[in-house]
Image: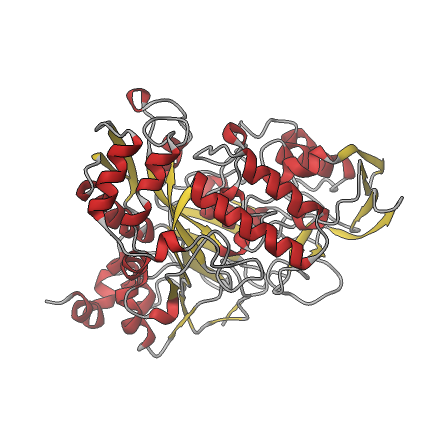
Length: 523
């Protein structure tokens, strides 16, 4: 029997037995992967980010136009020719333990974040002093004007969560598991089941912004539901059946072959809400051979056909994907075709073989880590793995679950000590709108994101971008950055796509963006 026929006929039979509660508004959600890590500073996984947005507030949040708006702060004043910023925490802000959110908590949180985050390190480098003139006032005294300060504090991925000073005093290299946060939901640790469930309750004492309109991560974060349950369901057929039967309300990443079936269901909506979508990549470990050699990385370019990757990820509907993707989000102001001929010219595996030999590849084993429980990464990995084998790479293709993968990726050692060489990844397109937040384009070495590429030229160009005030000059710099990126190759772009959500029509008022649980209602 075909899978779709089975689903349509017997959805209820395949659905998981998820408990129901009486007289409470409960949203049941299937995330893209299990919540393996809780701390959004320690781990930048998107599932951890989504969790973090429920539990923590930000000082600023982005609206639908990607403009920073005050969030935990009620506003700011700028003095001393742009070199002094005073931000005032809004009245009534509390942590989940009932204590007030104070300036010293925010300062400790910012310092923990900026020690780890690439954009945060820029803010740290231009800050002479970060102080608390009073319990509610945070003061940045800068070495020079830095207009993008609020953009950094409003970053929606690898964001700066505000937590109590007693927790924020721990370094970002240590994962915090005490989820005492400042956001609109409390994490219910006692109900956490690794690999299966995470639970959140509405924080009754949360005080939203008193003004503004809900818009992505900006505006009042008002909660209209009592409880949110995350149910990890790796099997797509089971998740689809549960959604059809009403056992779950919202599936974050339905697989493309199931979209027609779900669209045809009278009680289900299929909609792409994350306006920037996702951008895929083949990410190298730049610390270990053979991909510490940029010529070997570049040799692979002629073997990557973005159309193949996007078809594998999102199917034949070209309206959902873009196969002309560089290092900035297609369609955004700084995206260009600069250097793209290496991606759009003829694909030639024989050329790749010759170029690998010329670059010095001598058959070294390459460990490719593949999280099979993330469908998009599993699909991209299958295409990349086939390419690696066909061009003569000595491939060790290791299939893992997401929790094991994310811990494995933190290992900087060689493959003989449990390390890795390459993996497929994706990032939110929103962070690739500007070089300021495109952290995977950074060339910071071991101070940067997993993969650890080093490029003094890319870093210099990024500094020029941050100092530039003229749009035309900024665009020229971004073109230079992309050309340089195709030389240094921090990663190979595999395309961009819009990932639809599938959710029951009983869910209303869902905001644009990645999964956000404030503002929405359940009938």
